[in-house]
Length: 202
Image 1 (cartoon, rainbow, N blue to C red):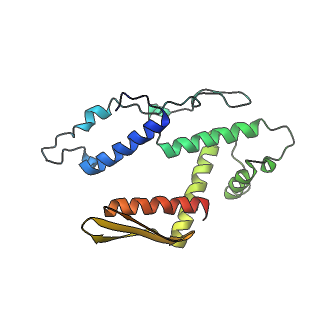
Image 2: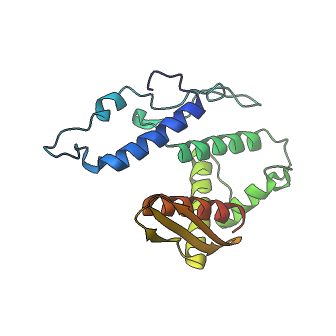
Image 3: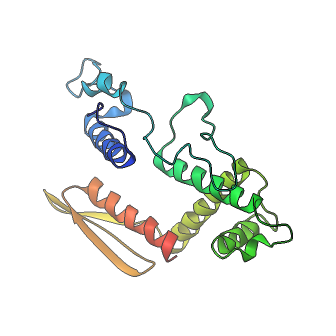
């Protein structure tokens, strides 16, 4: 699978497979479940997997100039979530840089509401660099999740029988339940929907 063209859709599916396999094999210590401290068989293959997805847009300059890939200190690959926040921060920063003089960023027809929320979250100021925008967006999203956790509490999970579990929460959008084949899967699905609703309805 590591030899497939790593377009983003393929790459994301492989990351999901990796996480599931590592969870089943007890990846925390990279040991074979049969003992003896042996590395699991997927470990060697994983070393050859691409660390980031291919993207026709990743290195393309944004409208208004500039370009090149975002910095990646130490060559460490970023996870999907941080990549999205990084690209959003880059887009917002460069778009605002290219606004005509005298234009209020908060009046931008698309980015205005985001700019306003960030300004309020930072106590009245706006980020001045891509890195500052990235941190501001990430912390704003984190604050939304933390506030939702405090208001609605985290999802719960219950075992129905040997092969069925149910995850649930009562939060934005009302009561939600999901059934799965394991407690872990049920809890994961409930958390996924919980965070989605916090970010879109909370």
